[in-house]
Image (tube, rainbow, N blue to C red; front, side, top):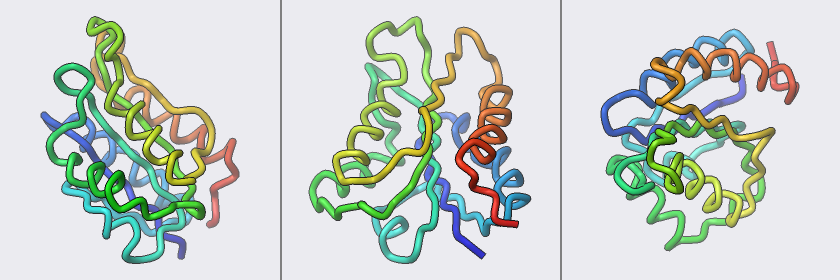
Length: 154
């Protein structure tokens, strides 16, 4: 069974809630799923990762939440080269913050691409100004993502 790892960057639990809500969709598609809410680079590179999903909220002025900062820092410092990694990204933000809207997700996306990882499809950006519960947008996006990227293995 292929392994899907969901890496969460969250301040108040919204991104973790999204991860927990979408997990069954991947299990139905034939994946073993692990959620990392205190992710380390070793969680990604230390064992096989067939597919990764990043669920990241934005804090402050476009900043990464504290729980995923060590992961991002290690990614920058160690440059592990992620040429075989395929991933998706769900960024949570608030458009009232203007230019820094979904800044954490966008930054992480750039870091991953800089290491050679391949994002499958477009990044989902969920605006708290328009969507009260992020999973209302995330669930249909994940269903579509699984279909459009032909990720179903079951």
